[in-house]
Amino acid sequence: MPDPSRRHPRNAPGPWFVDLTCVSCDTCTDISPEIFGRDEARKAYVRAHVPAEFDLFRFALESCPVEAVGDEGG
Ligand code: SF4
Image (cartoon, rainbow, N blue to C red; front, side, top):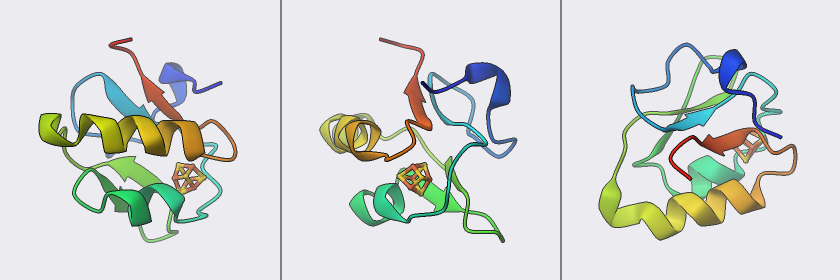
């Protein structure tokens, strides 16, 4: 379960986030490079909230193998 208290420090402010349990599998960043960025260790974070890509965000959230992608908005 994504843990908002362990958010990646680079997450953009807002409800969408990636926590520090990310295992750098690249799934979310492949699904939406506009929403998800990668740090130097290839850990993902939310680079930008893109409302038009909400469905892609939810797909990435459901596809993350370690449930590191969270949505505090719902
Ligand atoms: S899908 Fe999950 S484990 Fe894979 S890069 Fe994204 S946050 Fe990390």
